[in-house]
Image (tube, rainbow, N blue to C red; front, side, top):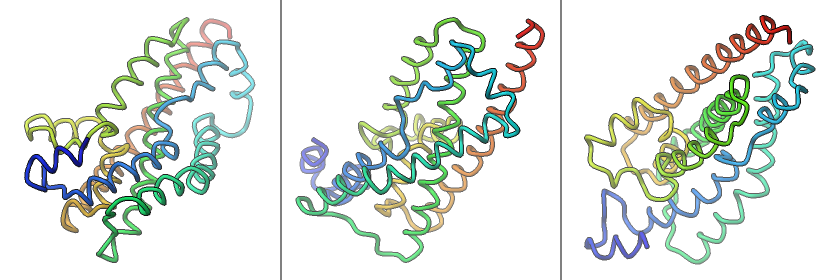
Length: 227
């Protein structure tokens, strides 16, 4: 569909060539399993059953413990679920391969930051279970919002600048998929690539700080209530 849109626009749409759009889609499908936008409710389930109390007795902070497990999961997914869709796109479509040497290390860094940011977002959504009896509402909102606003369904560069810039700078969603995908297809020149990854770095720090703050408040609430 994106290729049809590009064809209708004369070959280039929103700065993307057909090869860049094909690469965007197939690499995005591979990254979906690595970043893991959806499907993680371990913390919410442990909060519901009360098993989270045993997590608080461990010497490792819960955020660090869950983040370490998620990084291991992402590394495994990178080997087993990222490569097949990328190879499929490479074999059957005109692919945009990186042409500048800094692109590959910057892409690896961007994917790592995307994994950390996505983990933090999922952790915060799960942590609503400390206050809510049922987290299905926050889960549904996260599922609907993250897919659209992260650039999974279409490149966010299709949006007008008055929507795109606030979305990119004021929310973590474009840092989940749009940024690493724009980096690997070299949608922008080198300084802009580095700038978008720097935005990811800021969001990673803010999200992890938010996770620790929420966890501390949740533990205080449990102690006050005799948990």
